[in-house]
Amino acid sequence: MPNKVDFNKDYPSIKKSDEYYKVALDLIPAQTQTLAKGTGQNIKGVAPKYLKRGKGSHVWDVDGNEYIDYTMGVGPLSLGYAYDKVDKAIKEQLKDGITFSLTHPLEVEVAELIHQVVPNAESIRYSKGGADVVSGAVRLSRAYTGRKKVLCCGYHGWHDWYISVTDRNKGIPQEIQDMTFTFNYNDIQSVIDSIDTDTACVVLEPYVFEEPKDNFLQKLRDVCTKNGTLLIFDEMWTGFRIAVGGAQEYFGVNADLACFSKAVANGMPISILTGKKEIMKLLEKDVFFFNTFGGEALSLAAVIATVKEIKDKNVPAYLAKQGKKLKDGYNQIAKELEMPYTKCIGYECRSLMTFDASAGNPLEMKSLVQQEMIKRGILWGGFHNMSFSHSDKDVEYTLKAYKDVLPILKKAVSEKNVRGYLKGEPVEPVFRKVSNFNTKPKKK
Ligand SMILES: Cc1ncc(COP(=O)(O)O)c(C=O)c1O
Image 1 (cartoon, rainbow, N blue to C red):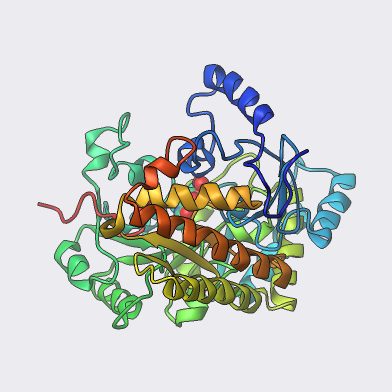
Image 2: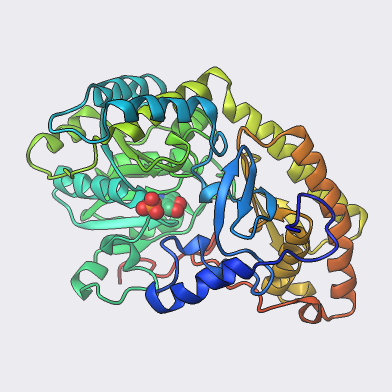
């Protein structure tokens, strides 16, 4: 019998997952299209590898095991799996067609909606993935300023200009690598030290888990303005989640360009580039930003249904409310158990569990918690990516599971034998580090 969301006797059977994986090993390099969904982020031998179905906050793997999901498609499922209103909008549009030979009216309707809810969205364009729109924004900033250099902080997708600063930079010419540099979040001096008259833009996620301190975002805005550099917000995670209008609304700081994807269409593939008309007008002709599927109508229909629901139901407030219960609950349990080495940090809509190296190998500790959460029917990657479908029942059950699981970690840590408790190889470090993601500071 497959496992349920329950205190199951055994770890789930993942036989079918392993069968698919065996075939993928031979056919699909890296076996995944999204690094964060790959086996490196999941304990071997225990975690399922393939999901087949989702409803609300629950998912079922190919072996039929059920879980509460806290990864939520690595961001897009802001409302929840198979969310009726969004699915209905997609099905209605499907009857009329997906991609057309001329522009579709939904392109206009979505633009009007985004213009209404996102600050500074004076002009709007679409593409398919997050990297597309951030790269579009970077190209625009170079065209607008006539400069070359980019300063960034965080993760911005797979394109050359960004990935060149990481250690996965094979295939990118040195000349490209020489144009992007990184700065430290909450360290305005690292920006001041690096910015110069050739800096076209500063691009960042307005926050990842750490809160902006000492007016960091406004200071960044001021430094950019003073230097004639554009400020670009990469709102893949903050957009439609921290506030309906994203980080610009939440922090009251204006970016020149802001990029969205993930949460905006509840799982449909679309990304949105927004910004000041004066800059965006370069997209009329000078800056080329066109592709076949940018106006694909199912995703646009999903945007309308998703954004309306996020706005009408004040989804950001709900995510914060449910996320707070989990974050506070986790920290309370860890405190009562006297486990100062693990914490839940970040904004409530998306929080992260940390494990301190003073108590042992953090990746092994994370793997043990993951292994035991999976046994209890919770698909857990060390994050609470909240959705509108995470119910009180889900949250209460999850806290009950933490109460059962954290003592196991405590025992393993006190015996200095976390590894001995693991049923398989531990998880690997996340590529998208959350702090000190600063591999190439300051131009020499
Ligand atoms: C902050 C941020 N920017 C850009 C991207 C790239 O988006 P995509 O993978 O859709 O190209 C991601 C993806 O995780 C992201 O989290």
